[in-house]
Amino acid sequence: ADQTDFDVLVIGAGPGGYVAAIRAAQLGLKTACAESRETLGGTCLNVGCIPSKALLHASEYYDAAANGAMAAMGIKVTPELDLPAMHGQRKDAVKGLTGGIEFLFKKNKVEWLKGLATFESANSVKVGDRTVTAKNIVIATGSSVTPLPGVEIDEKIVVSSTGALELEQVPEHLVVIGGGVIGLELGSVWRRLGAKVTCVEFLDQILPGFDDDIRKESNKIFKKQGIEFRLGTKVTGVAVSGAKATITVEPAKGGAAETIEASHVLVSIGRRPNTDGLGLDKIGLKLNQRGQIETDHSFKTAVPGVWAIGDVIPGPMLAHKAEDEGIAVAENIAGLTGIVNHDVIPSVVYTMPEIAGVGLTEAQAKEHGDIKVGKFPMLANSRAKTNHEPDGFVKVIADARTDRVLGVWVIASVGGTMIAQAAQAMEFGATSEDIAYTCHAHPTHSEALKEAAMAVTGKPIHI
Ligand code: FAD
Ligand code: NAI
View 1 (spheres, rainbow, N blue to C red):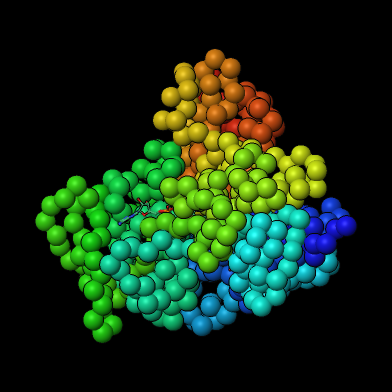
View 2 (view 1 turned 135 degrees about the vertical axis):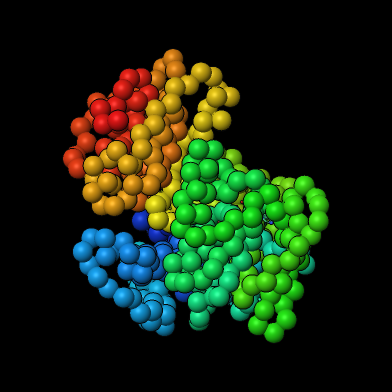
């Protein structure tokens, strides 16, 4: 007879875990979700995607008022910053959405087990002082900030993204360590609100993983906006004395050290999987060299009955990737066929303009064979031009022989929304011609994607 408490126990209620739990319950499985935070939603809803977007959106309005962009449209305003109110609307956004997940758990009869979960065996887990058993256990414990050796994060002066979302004053000088997604998004927030921002990046260009043209162009745009960059530079230490930080840097390739003084330091050099304290040794589950849990295509780990999804497994550390894996793992547990196409996962940096991409970079695509590239500047797009948003371009990369779209890269004010169309086209195996001959509404930024596709094999109209 079946003696287990649950059909499915999910560990972690981030975008991976909460979605897996809801889908499992929708499929008729008796489901629980263990979460040690006081609210559901994981990194994304509590200290990640949502609060960062709340500050990006609000600071963009402030910047538009302060930098003359509104005056250029005939609206004269002198903005006054009410930082506590700005933080207030950030907290409201988080509260509304995390509360929403709690509501969805109740609605779908997912039981929330409050506390830290530790494996006792492959089908039993201790959560707080309660031990529960389940036929299937899904590890969705996510990730946390990678520390920089020798740099102590106090979340006041030397902050991770979590502290950078909650600063009570606009920093005088914020030094950002790492020119990746977090550094550029949160660096932009505080730059817009009046901070001097210096970004120190180890590599010779920002945004690793993005297409080279996009990396170069976005670096130019951020510089124009006033962020200072120290590329090819590594941080070797941060010393805090009183309310001041002294950052020691040296050329990445080695050379003379120098120091930078700052009021605040943001450590954003990446994130690492959460597996400490999970008791994986009890079930004999080993990590790979990067500390991740490996799974097969259906998200099964090496231990029968134990599955894993989201930031804790290989692949991009993105909320939508975790969510799609959450749906797929629940469907696989229920005996259906859950699939995630890891070749078509869009990636977006929510700065102004937004930076987005899906599929292969030009360099990656060239390794696969002959390609054709079409580009179209936002400056020649009627809507972007009318809206005073001339920065950026769209780039479509297609296979030279089959014309199949291999990658799309965008810098545009609404690039994050535009990339969805590219992802869908690629999911359907579209050619650049398919996009070029699809009727796009006028005047929209999306027409730039159509014209970039036209540029792959022929000529666009508007340039
Ligand atoms: P998480 O969201 O990390 O959730 C894991 C949960 O498990 C946590 O709540 C944790 O408390 C819990 N947990 C861990 N161990 C245990 C245990 N033993 N017992 C019980 N509970 C446990 N991604 C995007 O796609 N778009 C964005 O705009 C974006 N912005 C971001 C901004 C910032 C500042 C940060 C830090 C991240 C951002 N991300 C963004 C990344 C995104 O947050 C993650 O990819 C996503 O949250 C991963 O989901 P997950 O479910 O795998 O893990
Ligand atoms: P990241 O991996 O995007 O960028 C880290 C950067 O730091 C890299 O450019 C790297 O070269 C650099 N670096 C590493 N060590 C360094 C050193 N010692 N000195 C100077 N530079 C150094 O990591 P980040 O920005 O911390 O973000 C973590 C994760 O969170 C990302 O993987 C991303 O997927 C996710 N995220 C996603 C967002 C989005 O989708 N909009 C927003 C924020 C985070």
